[in-house]
Amino acid sequence: SQKIEQNSEALNIQEGKTATLTCNYTNYSPAYLQWYRQDPGRGPVFLLLIRENEKEKRKERLKVTFDTTLKQSLFHITASQPADSATYLCAPSGSARQLTFGSGTQLTVLP
Amino acid sequence: DTAVSQTPKYLVTQMGNDKSIKCEQNLGHDTMYWYKQDSKKFLKIMFSYNNKELIINETVPNRFSPKSPDKAHLNLHINSLELGDSAVYFCASSQVTLKGEKLFFGSGTQLSVL
Image (cartoon, rainbow over all chains, first blue to last red; front, top):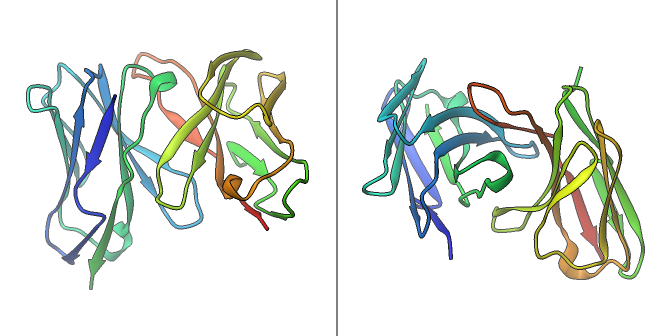
C-alpha cells in the first residue's frame, strides 16, 4: 500500500537558519508532489507543486526538490522566521483526486 | 471573501445524533472534496465530487452521505454519530489548470462526539 513518511514529528530551529523537511514515499510513482502549510485551527494552504520531470522549484525563500529515484522530496525554508512556524504537509500525487497527505512535520522557528 | 467556507466551525453532539456540515466555494471550481483529519494529523480523503457527481468514495461508513445540490456546494450529513467520528473535517475544492491541480481548503469543522 502507498506510504508517506515525513521526518520527525517536530523540528525546532533557530531564526535565520535553513529548515529542511523530508518527505519519503513508497509503493507508487506520483506525477507530481505538493507541499502545504497548516496553521493551528486552519485548513492546509498550498505552497508549491513540483512535477516528476523537475528537479527543483523555488518560490521566494522556499525551495523544493524531487528525486523520483530516491522517492524523496526535500523542502527548504531559508532565512527562517518565527512566522514560518507551522505544520508542513507533503502530498505526492497523480492528480488532486488522488492526493494523499503525509502526517506533517511541525516546524518551530525560535527567535 | 472566503474562497471555501464551511459551517459550523465547532460541532459538539451526543452519540447517536444526526448532524450536517455545510460547505460552499466561490472559486468556480468543478471539483469539491471532504477530508477527515484525525488526532494524529493524518489527512484522508473521504469523498470527491465533480460537477455534482460523485467520483471518489473512499472506505467510509454508509452513515456518511455527501450531497451536492450544485457545483459550488458540497454538504456532509452524518447519521448515528459514533465516538470514533470525532475529528476535524475539511472541505476543499480544486480546478485543473496548466499549472497543475491544487487544493483550496476550508478552515475545518471540529466535530466532538460525546
